[in-house]
Length: 252
Image (cartoon, rainbow, N blue to C red; front, side, top):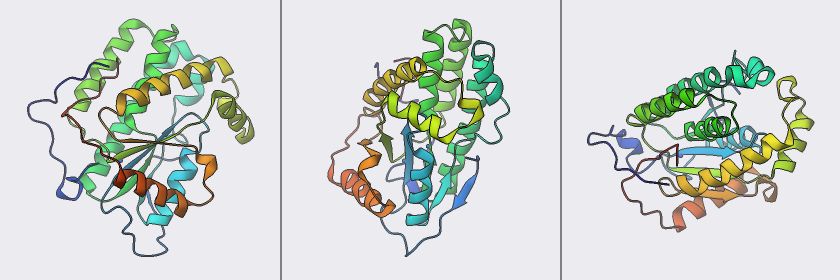
């Protein structure tokens, strides 16, 4: 991935997030803390992973355990979702722009509220889907160029998450979980699509980790949110995450 310099006048995060910044509904839900949360200090945690990886479940559990706001992926009120799965090529561009807009709004709300938060799927992951759709001919090349330009313009106003927690799930496991949760709109998802998506995620993690700290986790190894939170804290605090001043490029 080619790393480009940040814009000359990047947006400055609020003091609460100056130390750093961490992806079903679209707004925040306050977790119910079991004790005064002081696990990370103020932090923006993004949960990334394949369809069915367990992002929403983990985001909910961490939000409740840490007593912080949880932001969910806009699924329930996504008016393009059914059409997208029914006729992907026709609705791919509209779907990706819709998601980019909603996630940008959510991302900015997290930053400017200046409070710790966990987000179910990050805005950066949208680029995986758009790139895969373009590669497989399901999105027009002209539309993809427009999408990338829009993403880059938006990225000039985005502060990075503190850390991204990547839930590593195989395409086969993803397919099994999709089948188990039985959402009608997901019934047409094929294993080949998930395999292409998995390859996209591996490339994404390798690239985004040059810009934002990434903790790769096998979610099935952990029994409780407390255990997961302790692991995330240890990995984040113990590792060295010195970064050049960089910007994520969705085309790389």
